[in-house]
Image (tube, rainbow, N blue to C red; front, top):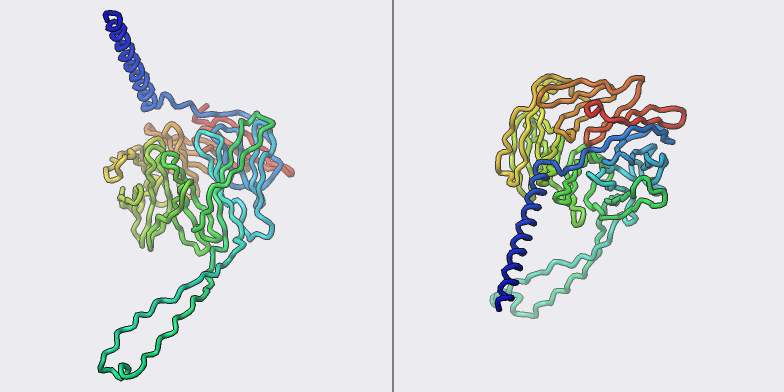
Length: 410
């Protein structure tokens, strides 16, 4: 008995010690993640490559900086920067209308995975639907009515008929491309079909894609063939739905990478507002015709003030789990820089980068810096995390690309 009692006490002590140790490790890891210490540093590379194509459009680079995607003359291609060769190509089906094939794509964060949208003609442009006749309810006949004196004829029931229903003339697929490690010469990228986006408007062009890995949702800002802007939400594993309201024009969107909240820049008539959307809830953030969404990163929403085509101020608010709570906008920067026809992104360190092919403005809480990107007519692209600069120049039948850390990360 004494042995069993001693053994039980020792076992209990070890159980308590193990639980305390596990809790301590969990708390430490959680604390490191909360402080951002556990996040790996962004990847930068220095290299030069000759891409065997010209007239490159929609150039995007993966987060690991080893795959480059682009389109040329309607063909979608992926170039392996490590092996310096094209490893994936996809064209529109034969006989497709203009602007079909791969219409847009988006690199998912922190992994070599790309989602892309592929449009093709619907082989069944219409369907014949069997329509049942509406049931006729006959009122009872009064005994005093003339019909009551004789035989009442029995009505002949109507036959069901077929009606022609027009289908969407375009089928739009959401697909996933999973790439192997870029130095693996034997492995092939895995091209997977996900879902048909049935409600995608035929001939529509994607203006902006944002994704929330927290909720597995993808948001598309689509310009229809008629010029209207529409906002679509896609659950990669389920279905799609429209988020814009009647009479509303959506100018810009950003998704929280922390809570999955979607922020929209909405205009109805002459009034512009910025809303937060979560599920079926919509909450106003600010109403100001001069405010615009710059982006969202690491749980912070960045809003800019634009006056006379110049950015004059930036405010920052904190994402909330409950969109009814105020995000608490605070001043981040004030100044004056050109804003028309500029590209905007939020870097991994929270800096706002506004640039074109010639120059970039890097804005932080302590001020802004102007950086010349290139010369001699080169094109410039900055990676979506803000750490890599791509300089492109067309040669005779090919495009030379140079990669180097963006100036802020030298």
